[in-house]
Length: 314
Ligand SMILES: C[S@@+](CC[C@H](N)C(=O)[O-])C[C@H]1O[C@@H](n2cnc3c(N)ncnc32)[C@H](O)[C@@H]1O
Image (cartoon, rainbow, N blue to C red):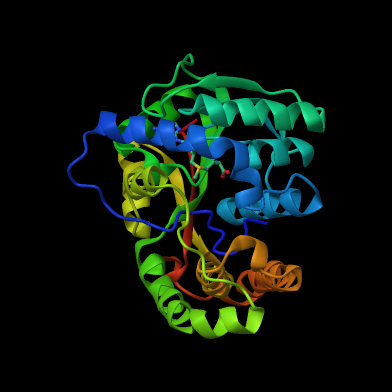
């Protein structure tokens, strides 16, 4: 699973106002190069049945129906391969190319692919300057990446250029601005309850989480959080059709952030296995509740993650 707080999104989502686009890209490369080694375990990335089902479900939700089998796909900001490798395993894509600004992430992706017996092309690339010919792909996709990209209209123009006519663009796991604000409530409550929770778990208090440089970079790699209309406007302005923006994860996310906030205050080795299992299973269960009961009934803006799907005119 995308572990508690999933959304795999980082602890800090703020708008750096003083950095240039180049500095943001550089921070992203360095931050994700360092993160690559422990990324899968940190975020509970799974390449088994759970991962396959999570990713296929996200694609289905984003499209609003059963996905076709896509011939050639390009993933943007593919990281260690969560989306593409699981989609290959699920048989939803034929030939896969993965791109990322971080060589370290792509190295881990290749190791994951080799372990799973999958073939994938990888290419270090910035989303705003894709090194691919016009019309090379039937699907351009990504997960948790748009919010890192400084110039989104430029990136969307690139997605459109490398897509074949009638091709699909699909992004999931993007932070929703209002969903993010709502998630502050469980985070604050969990922060206040942390001393009692640590006593109950017999866990010692953590002295510090991560290195100072990691933390400072974490604050600058996240450039955007979106209102649904902002995402759809960018896609429409680029010329995409059939634009669809949806939201996912509400209760699962509140539960996840509560647990992540509590856990972050304790020495990791002191957090009992039984607690971790409770957090993991509870999160999966609430994902189901969100999916079955809430996502089709409530406005996308209040969910924690947004997804967008659209089509290049044929
Ligand atoms: C939050 S991670 C998500 C990784 C992966 N998609 C997943 O869901 O596990 C964001 C990824 O986007 C990449 N990234 C950040 N800025 C980028 C840019 N301008 N162009 C391409 N990739 C970028 C990072 O290196 C990182 O691998």
